[in-house]
Image (cartoon, rainbow, N blue to C red; front, side, top):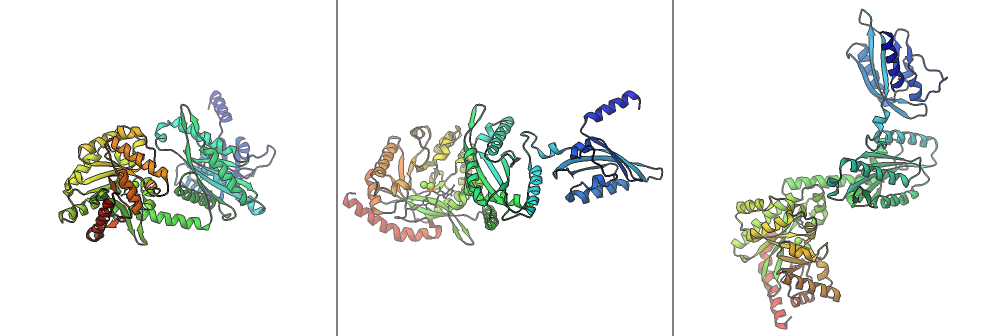
Length: 569
Ligand code: C2E
Ligand code: MG
Ligand code: MG
């Protein structure tokens, strides 16, 4: 090498973070470049071990076997290059990540006599998120391992791990660019840090997931206050350029009074608790105890059975009759889903939110449509119920966003030989607020196909009067909460009357939900409500019970209507 090349090389080495390394294998003598000391915190005058052990003794025990094996393979000539990532212990007990690259020099017989190479400190790249520069899972586990080992010497405090899962409200995730998501994560990280002590650690595990290590908690009684503060501070809206966004949070926590032996297990416990907190809904926390794992396993079993039930179309419609409120004639049925499961029948409120989260809810609609329409058609064909009867099926909001929905409905109805006019679609106000124009088009297409649309649970959501004009609707379903209050609350009476007036002004019919008593029925008839359903008439019936209800219960109910008519009520 000429002298200018040599001086360039020296300059490069002096400015790089790499430590050059030479090992005379016959003498077992090693030489390390000066960055070795600074990388590992070894004081300038302190002696270095003079042999391969200076390096090998610092290798993390978990990685020792892998490193030794790779070294042997290279020495024996199996691999052309010795390259391996591993951790080395710093003088302060922490771990540095290094990338070792080396090659043997061999004598004429091919025996390795010398090895030369370099160590590159890759800790930063390995342990920090590349965008937010927050510590990642690797660094978190390193720190947690050290705090658990300190705990073994001084058992006078508690180490706690928190796993925080945040998510943006629907629609916002698509709105933010990658840079804005980074900005959001940074802000969330800062807010978390502001609620804990300077020596505690905040790490980022993914875009919106964080973990916190609380190293010196006096007692577990102190923890709930911290969870509540974190929930509060994270829920406050965040300004990201022109957008004001807010996040939902679930916190899971686990502490060393329950698991102290292993950092991975303690973190996993906090993660399980966070998964459970998410199940409980937004802005909840769960503190791990031995039953958490059980609950989570039960939940996972439930979810996998649910998945199987969708594949096997194992859901059954039950049918709740809907009557004309003027004379008690049968107007149709609402199909309400039931899941027959080994432990008994499961009601929709217990599994519909899960199906929504899993994105499987529209598959349920198709199962319900198929099964309920086929049964209903059979009853008409058998002369059991009038040909004017309709089946109402509940549609989730996202289904109305599907531009192909009405086309698919036509094909499906055609396949089972059922006229479109037999179907009534129930949607909720939630479908209408997220409107993008698509919902408007879908409702128009349903109207053109002769399929009526009812707005379910009217008055409980975000209804605005403008919706009734903007969207093609046929019927308003007055929520059960108004109906059940009719007997005690003058306000419920006036609201109900107002809804009926509003509907009439928009040429819509009305259906009262949840009628349980004759006095409620009297009120609703006097306001001119068109249809009604509720336990007074019938609960939702399995398909096999409908014939009996029609022959035994319906005539009894019609006598009740005749009596009411003769009272003039
Ligand atoms: P919804 O569509 O408002 O259905 C009415 C609910 O009120 C039904 O509960 C029904 O059994 C109940 N109900 C009817 N009359 C009375 C009464 O007189 N008193 C009382 N206390 N309750 C009454 P269910 O079957 O548990 O359904 C709950 C909700 O689950 C439904 O509310 C609907 O939003 C949803 N759901 C049911 N089936 C389906 C389905 O196939 N697909 C979808 N996406 N959602 C469904
Ligand atoms: Mg409904
Ligand atoms: Mg309803």
